[in-house]
Length: 230
Ligand SMILES: Nc1nc2c(c(=O)[nH]1)N[C@H]1C(S)=C(S)[C@@H](COP(=O)(O)O)O[C@H]1N2
Ligand SMILES: [Mo]
Image (cartoon, helix red, strand yellow):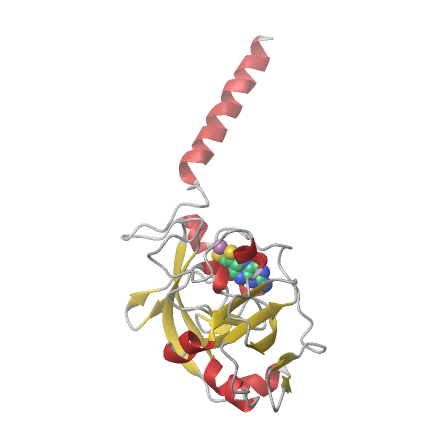
């Protein structure tokens, strides 16, 4: 019996020792250093700095996607840009990578309270939309993803912000967790506008379209700095 309690005590000390050394996974990196849990999230070859500014790991502390992480087979994958379009287009992954690209350092904010500073590389939405020859009544862009997720933004906001569809994050191809092959980088919008695993971009005239989280009460405008719900 006594031996049992000694073992229990040793076990407890070991466990508490571990707990002291391992920071909680959700704790954000402190300004003067990077937590061990955060360090582990950087992938091989991933940039940790960009023009002297600290980058966060592209892969977040946990997955919150509606059906889990999607594994896209790039051999069968295609990206369609259609809807109210005179020249609907279908692209392979390589087609998109061959287009002129842009880099953006942009912070992603989730309504759950975390955020991440990431450098994105991708093609402008303007170039993708223009190639499909949008009809005059197009005012809304709807993103469809392979997990059935959808979200939308007004065409004008996408053009004004010169927003991009990204295939690289922090210098490496998007990890599956981040939406490989493509994520819509919805700068200045809450995380639920950042469609991952995008497979279809629909040109629409439905200004009141509501995506997955929007139908569940989240703001369709989703501007950072304004309430995300209601
Ligand atoms: N296809 C798809 N995209 C999605 C989601 C999803 O469930 N499915 N979740 C959204 C939400 S709520 C957030 S906060 C971000 C999270 O992006 P990250 O975890 O890759 O940083 O993805 C958004 N894009
Ligand atoms: Mo989110």
